[in-house]
Image 1 (cartoon, rainbow, N blue to C red):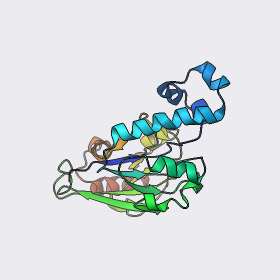
Image 2 (cartoon, rainbow, N blue to C red; image 1 turned 135 degrees about the horizontal axis):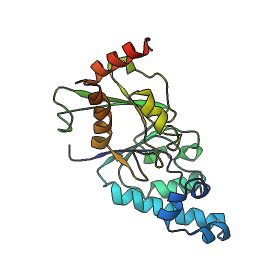
Image 3 (cartoon, rainbow, N blue to C red; image 1 turned 135 degrees about the vertical axis):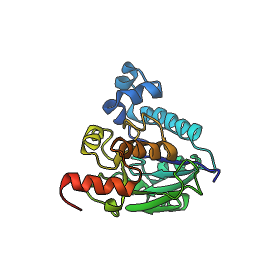
Image 4 (cartoon, rainbow, N blue to C red; image 1 turned 180 degrees about the vertical axis):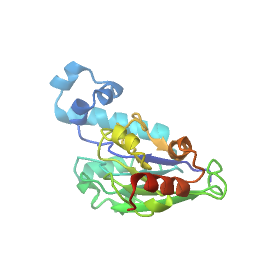
Length: 226
């Protein structure tokens, strides 16, 4: 397939409070500390949105697919419509806890789910090992157990803005945060190949060849199945 697949979450359009919570966002949006305290929130919101729209469209081509894992826009429905109308790519949305503005804007989306499974294989994307199906379970919230976890399915989430990166790493689970502020995303979008290689690196550290083999190893180590 010629189109690329992208994953991201927690972009938080029209939510200027993110500029306080994540100083790197402020830096990338070109807002200095003085402007952060003196500019009206509405103006900060517009500056932030313009930066995020530019980031999106410089990354995503019109034919690409984007799996958006929740928390899109804190503005109203009209503001979300304005932004969605400007963004490249086919958009597959997983609902987060800040997504009321998507209601009424479904025509801009390929679909809207609470949880979605996506599968990719070598015939579609040659970087995936021949004969292997790369299965990901998409949910805004990080899960302890998910569908087909025992068969090597990987879990992709958002919501935590990178605060669970170490927890995910230490757990050895096939689980990762793709939020804009996470370690893997690093204030950008995560493409399918990067996501696949991230999970392959986890299983290969334990000498496993397949995701199924790794799932069996992890369950034996943990002493339980779920």
